[in-house]
Image (cartoon, rainbow, N blue to C red; front, side, top):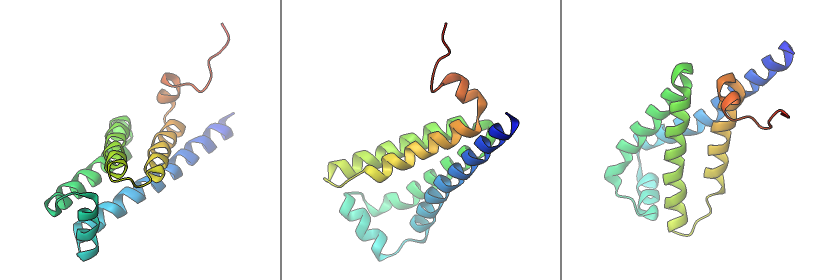
Length: 128
């Protein structure tokens, strides 16, 4: 039983780190800037002045997500961030499957590594 729990927690940590890496890379690219980023922001219909605030927001949400005591709040914030990304891509008619997948990985990784969350959101209920 302890081995299964340990594997579950480590799988959750790996998934959480992978999802966090995506956000950190995206935030870093926004901080670095460049012509490609400006063209991408224009394509999405977003002003270039939003780049730095979005980068700071993205990185701050990841930091909150990676701290065990604030991980649930971080997951909520990252889900909200991904909701905005989904809406932005949907608005311009682009696919948004990857944003949904990243959001699922954020929550599933947290669910695997946080036993209190598994109590609140069980995959199945015990028979009465």
